[in-house]
Length: 54
Image (cartoon, rainbow, N blue to C red; front, side, top):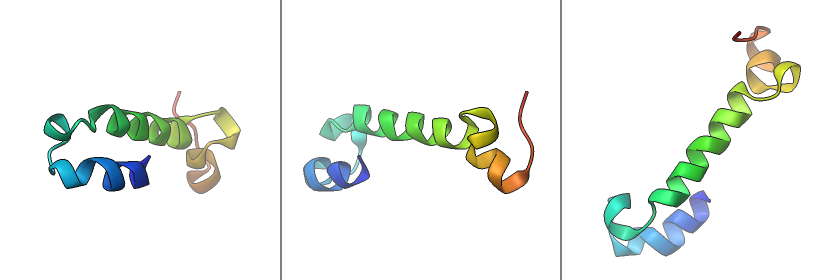
């Protein structure tokens, strides 16, 4: 997604709302949230910090 953002949307402008890249950035943000706070004991938070958010 990040590569697609740079290849397809950045040449049209830097601001995502003007170059049509807001949906791609939304997907990147959603995937990052799932990776960090995702599936309990297999999440990045649990592996790195040895704790879970309830």
